[in-house]
Length: 417
Image (cartoon, rainbow, N blue to C red; front, side, top):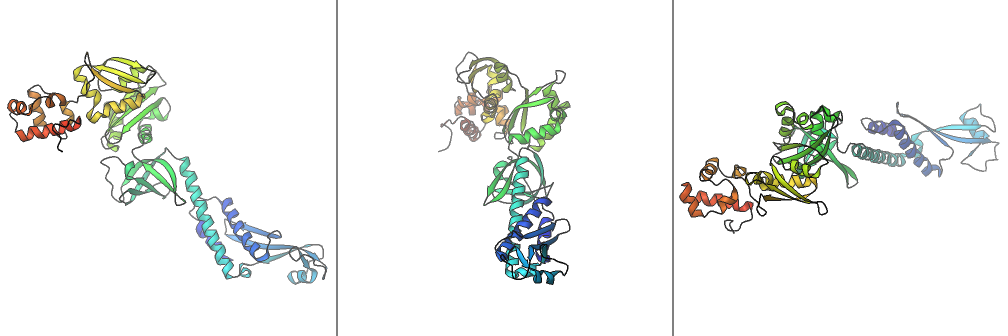
């Protein structure tokens, strides 16, 4: 008997399967064993003590006078019953204990395999259920293995293996085995009938959970996050609302001298986070969404959800942001298509030279600004000869600058074929 019970104990220990479920599985396995040997399991009792790992099998039959057995499955002759226990009488129920050895080695091995596979299926169901309930929760993990397309991590709370695909990591994330890493449980998917828990650091909910952790007012429900949009590792915009007039929602989220937001920015590899106060006033909400730019005027087309935004020339590049990140995020946050116009002019698309400081050296930008060229378009619209003559920079340096700036606007003049 111990072989199967040991298997049961071995597989139940450390698994997140409750005792009644395990008892039910064990009963099912033994009932199958009994059916194979006796064609039915109707006259059998199975007693399982999951805590001790004890298990008893009893065959129950009615005692009838010798020679009057009409159904061998439910009846036993008086003589046979006496051989089991001398105190039995006709008309009583005879309890005969069965032992695992009675079923034969092959049946026991088959039952063992069934038991193992049933327990594993139960465990898969349990993992799927428990993590599906935790979708959107913050999880702390230890990096176990770094593969080409994903990072395998271990949930610090229960030792389960989770998966962080590369496209769910932030640009600049660098992991080594043993590192502790935080993410949010994004989803649970089935791969080859196995539940795979996906952890993400790029999901909007990751930023929401980090803010909830850093800002007690969010956790307490005094401040609500109304919207989050991200370009992971680059920029994020969060709109917040306070339910208490005495609490400034933006100030509470940023903290004294940025103390609360700094930890989050570090966790997200210096992702620039704009926190703005939410409002039901669409005009004002669009203005706030374009922060840090200051908007002069807005024309809103509610039907087509489009907004024309007018700004002073020095605010245009701020509104657009490098590579258009600021305007893209603002559009997503307010769910409006935003078109930027320079005051009293046609639609413009320009970017401040300082936005290119990671591609163009500071002293080169300074030389261009010294001759009054402080935006990308103003440089591109000046001839290379003029730029060389007025700045005293090398022709090669000027051509490199023009290539970088032209690529920003898909201007074919200086982009190499």
